[in-house]
Image (cartoon, rainbow, N blue to C red; front, side, top):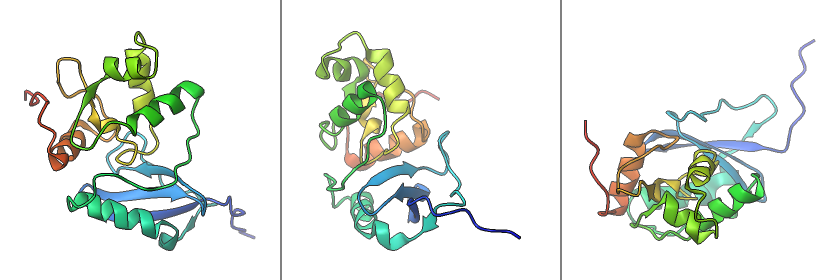
Amino acid sequence: MNQSAPFSGLFYGILDSPLGPLVLTGNHDALHSIHFPTSSHAVEPMEDWQRDDTVFANVFRQLEAYFAGDLTEFDVKLHFDGSDFQNSVWRALCDIPYGTTCSYGALAAAIGNPKASRAVGGANNANPLPIIVPCHRVIGADKSMTGFGGGIDIKEFLLELEGAVDIQPRLL
């Protein structure tokens, strides 16, 4: 007898975007994660998750407006489930204005730990809420494009969408 797994309380939704299908997870209280199809953190919905795009209707509207160039700041309740350090980095990322960038070192200094630029990079890589928690706005100290879980092409796309101009083009 094949019984389905009990519901974990986690919902997922799929948004068709210019980046491909984004998988969002969360519950009625908060958004937990966003996954790019090309990400090293990409997920397949788990058996104990329930698909319910209506749970994410507000987030979908905001993401669609962002991709259309009509939204520069998100108003979404987020669930942070990292270490204290990661959570502080993710909150600081939310303070980087639309269309601007900062270096890993500057972000480390902003959280009061100026020697932690590598650790900031690690926290960025673990960010479960890309786009809304804008880790794509963090670039190298030399203004170069550096790692991004969704891939450098997506990082470039997002920065170009936002009109960020203080970056070095990637050399092929």
